[in-house]
Image 1: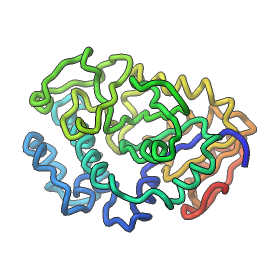
Image 2 (image 1 turned 180 degrees about the vertical axis):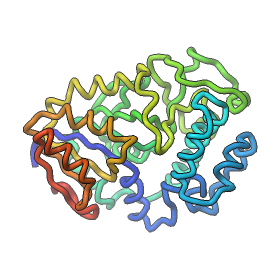
Image 3 (image 1 turned 45 degrees about the horizontal axis):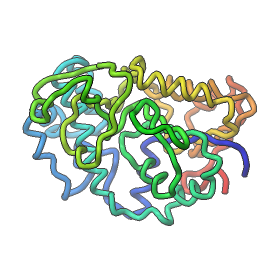
Image 4 (image 1 turned 90 degrees about the vertical axis):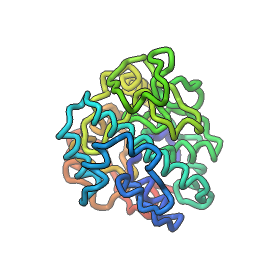
Length: 302
């Protein structure tokens, strides 16, 4: 099926990968070590007393607890800094835990391989590196806009941050042992530095992560703004826009709407959900965009 396409993924993309590997892990459970008995937080949790007290020791839905925590502490507080650090470190632990999982016959791996020459742009609202790893395994050249990566191949946008993003050292220099005792917030160094894999289990200078249930408070930073500008520049070339594992909940809606609003009127939207949000369907009708839905075990096209 011809035509250039863009891909927007959310947590459901990772959930599907874990299910394909018959894993007991859940990417929705960062406070519960993702359901693993092999993941440990002891190397950093002792330095985050509020995370331990207000999140780890509490019972309830992980994202609901994180929402309560985010409303309790000021956004520039050390406690909120610890939340962002915790998420970057926890999802880094998940990354290493699934590093030997099978990709070869996963349906999205095969689908991306088959449609590789028409992939114009990818957008991930996830912190993990699953999409990047999938593309790299398939030798699909890509780069994250707003980072110090070489701009080759298709664009990949991560407006909510990534476990391997940090402030460049020239902007703020801070020893690793000090990064959990202070706070940095919304420093604009124009771009983010991509960490090496052996740096992922150390605290960040500034963990550029948007916690679940929060609006994107980073959207005015240059490295995030440049992602939206880059999308605007190429959006007129998009024939098909595919949503995989994305919920249209209120905090993500402004960004999803932005991507949809800049599509050409003859573009088609494919939604990996047979029962999508009525608000999403309403938005598509308002934009006069044709859409199709498909079951999550299906593909948008062959």
